[in-house]
Image (cartoon, rainbow, N blue to C red; front, side, top):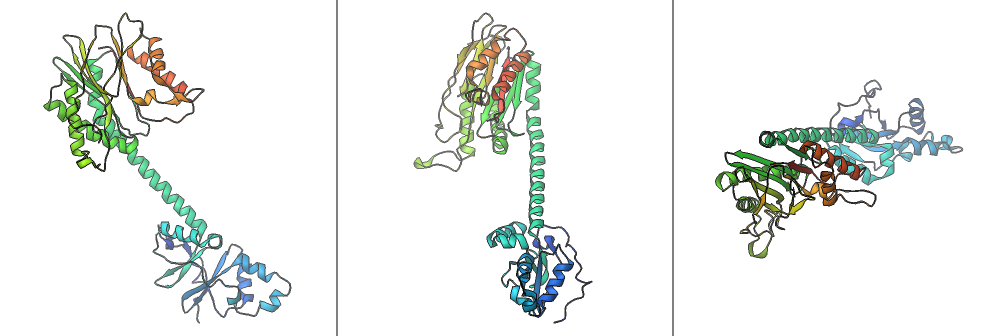
Length: 410
């Protein structure tokens, strides 16, 4: 068989691409009748040559592994005995052979299935069934790592931009809050750039309507829920009675259940079981009262001359979940809020954070203590006190959830 010249087969790497051909190198093959002396010479000339392909009629028929070959030929009298013979004696006749267009992810599974020898010595790459080069598993691992790093980079950038969008969607609410409640501080810190917590705030001639909510999940799934929920909430407020937060929550519950198909037909279950917990507040600026309706979210109230906080509990029923009845009505609780009253509401990310010497939850008591120690300060100073206590408690523990709370004097 006529083989291409050595010059033609000088090593050249095919352009980098996410296929087997992108990690193959053209190595001059040997024919079946090539002697072991010639193979020995090839390995001696190129100490980086890990394996040598064997072809017949342009098609690959085997691989000669350097380590195996050199070990056999180093035995006493081995060169005299085997040197003149065909290289077939030391050839692996069943190497891994793949097409140059094989996806690298699939290739990596095939390499692992073949075991350590293939991982060490490589595999043969073909083009339309004919020999095209030898693939390096080291290069495969590098390429897989690079591709994964690039995927992670793209995902990270996408999530970071999604975080910008999520913040932009809530910016109007934050600005309105700052303009309406001069002594207030809103902390919104998603655990994973984007998050499942959100807030809503609208001002009207006779008062304001505010929401602090924690949707199912965090990260990207949680962020999707915030987009869905905030849109449905805006509709519920527009078409409902803002002075009746309990009715707004009920309307939101119905809308979520309908949109996500979270209605259990004949006792069955849908594909989604998502919803939210949260606080819904209407403040009457003339009466100086706060109407409070909530799903599993307490409101802490400190009267101007109070010794400690009083706690206003919400209903123990989440919003939108499959086990939440379609016709459930959340109770309104009327809270007197004379000038100087301090109020604090938080999602469970603050309360449930694990930390401290015994790895327990931060809890409501530490929240109250942090606030009481700064009770005469502005809301931003009080909030910083809570955050500092929270951070010290968390220490080196990972953050468990998104963190959102609102401290204000109405």
